[in-house]
Length: 161
Image (cartoon, one colour):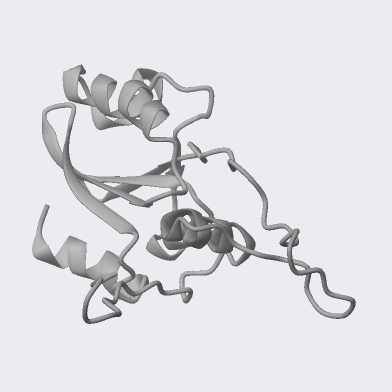
């Protein structure tokens, strides 16, 4: 994976910390896997996509037949379309200047709901849990746009959380 490939994805998502851009082996050639952490079912990704692609041989055009998943592997026409698909929670593979997407979206553990201890009469009835990665994933499911950027910062001098 070239630095240019990695940079174009990071530029599209504004250096968001939950963007995953990893080099992978696809049918004996170098490729790039792109997704948002927390939006993708990692077990399905590993067993249904990464293992078959690493073990398989053949032409890149045969990629959809090699992937073992209930969701089809589809070719994506433009980089902008691929960015939109990643923002919606899909996985994108970039192999030999071609883009492929597959939907391996993780099922929510819970929805954004009203906190039981602080009921409100007016305004939104939504609250988050304690796990920041899950909260960002919940936000991304509602706001399916690449301009939602999540930064990681350290707050607190003693706890460094």
